[in-house]
Image 1 (cartoon, rainbow, N blue to C red):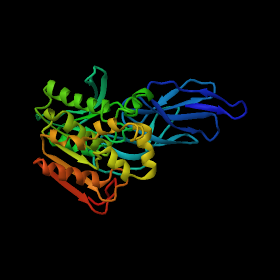
Image 2: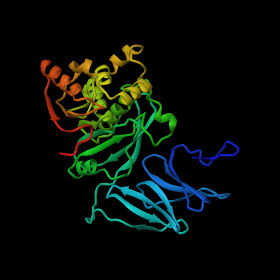
Image 3: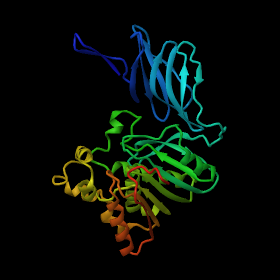
Image 4: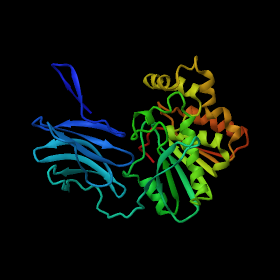
Length: 340
């Protein structure tokens, strides 16, 4: 976070953290500037008065967002494992937090995840959330984006799985936000490579540490893509996979995507004409013969980002190869589903 002086055209940097600092806001008086600070899976609200030191307050060990100053504090959105997003107010002097809205009356007691790290296939430490459960079955749940990350927020899908006896590992693979710019950019021109390997290493971690004997892999969007790269590059690790709104063929997905999304592909994987070998190597569609586990694909017919045609083509090829596959096509849905 920096303050830009309009007259001198100079920037005074307020933060230089190893994590991410986002969503800056000024107080009404202009004397205080604040922002959301993320370092790993938890966030806080940091602020600085003119001439003062950086200070920090938080509601709890969850996720803070969209801060706005009021006369006697800051109002923001807060969520954690047991609480969906609600408005909270924090007194900047005392740090006391007051809940302003309550969208869920029930008191929940979901499994609290741990932020752990494990060695990637190249030895680099990868952070992840681990929901422990008693049974020897696990789900590797891969987030989308890829510029996003799992945090100590409201994640009822993973909480529900854990409550039903499934251990869940949610890796913040290279390409994720929350761990600094170098980590976020580490998968550029290497998508389906280092991010895929970081996820596969998570499955190895579960097996080698006795947390699971059988592992299913799932994810949506880029997570659906990595679900399919995992099933084609490390088939021995997985007992099943469910890819939600995935893409599987960089060439076809690029051709059928919206124009602005094509630009994102080029930014992150280069032009298909120039990098055809890379685009082919990172498209799981061309390696479906390696799949050994049952596959489920879920897609929306009107998806502008991950076209349903990718899943339909992959389903047909898997059937032709004699693989076990199940396809759910939501006719009137896009990239996110409203009617479930």
